Image 1 (cartoon, one colour):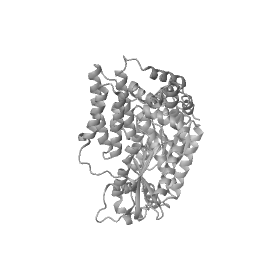
Image 2 (cartoon, one colour):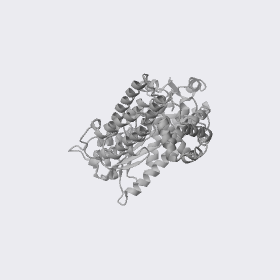
Image 3 (cartoon, one colour):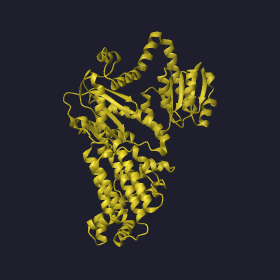
Image 4 (cartoon, one colour):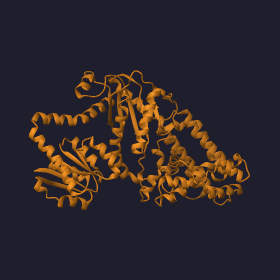
Length: 546
């Protein structure tokens, strides 16, 4: 009897599979029916089934993670994936990583039976034709990708042993690398792990990494003439490759941009890429990895979605003082607080710009140091505001607690947004009892009427009969924010109302004044911390397919 294990979290579907087919007639025994991935893994260890029928989306452990975990524990089995249309591309790619068949839900019992009988025929054929040696070879072949990954992980982490012969190992393992002229590429997915949707994010990321690794291989294989090995290293996706003689930094960057475009097209994700210098031998891949990580640090200052070559990386000089003892930053922070205290809000914002630009231009501190300095300064601003207003300062946006977000921000641009929002909030509290300047009020009225058109600082200044410079200065002084940022925030609030009504993203963009959907998505993410699609998911809607 063929042993079959079913892993499906939907009760009615799981029961239907069990009850609507006479499994014993086909010499098949159902040894277990799990309602989630964790229970399925327990049953896999206990029964060691020849066939696993599993849904991709399940609690605790998804279907792909279940297959990978079971394989890593040495279990031998065939797997059949059940998947919805939304996950079809991931499932298709996952078949190349060990799944034997896949079925699109909803599917009929006879479709499931046929898939299992197809696998059963493969097993029967193997048993008829196979020998002990063939079985050993099959097991060895199946485990080679895992062994390769483990070996390359060890090489990234440590310099070579005295008696180690890496050239011999790549020949024995069939690793697609030459032992010379090698570099390391690091791919980082820019999508954030926002707390409000963490379960969905973690489940999707396992699928995305499978697909991303496959797209990486197909895109870069011609560039390196087949001499490339993609690997997983913790949460990172990397590759080791041999650089062709004629390759330049310019042509390499172009190919990386093509990889970014493919990720955007097929997976709808943004990625950042960092590349080490070329090393003369495999014995130096650990230092190449360190270079790739150092190059990726440029992402904090230059923003996500870039290609960072170590050869172009402006390495930071030796830092003789801690960022906490930096007198220039201390003086700027004093100026910001002094201007806030004297209601000179425009000057406070200007000094905040100087504070951010000082960090950006020096580039001598790493992300963690900058985030620490920013957190301390924010807490000082919080205390300052509480003392002035004799009330608890409200820091929370309607979706994101900006202060809690500071330690985990990834770019200086994100930090700038948070700091600007905080200064803006302080000004709002200080100005609650004071009437707005009539010119600013007229400008706000014009924005309310025309926000969904192509308005600008120049056009609104013309309507209110003042100069661009004067209107910009008034906005900063009265509202603690510049004109364009206020316009974007107003449009984002209008967009939220439309997104709650389940409008398509491109429709919302047009209706709130953005001609390009990409511009709208970037702006919405900047001022909420979420993409429009993530916002819709949070409020219980899914974006309709176009």
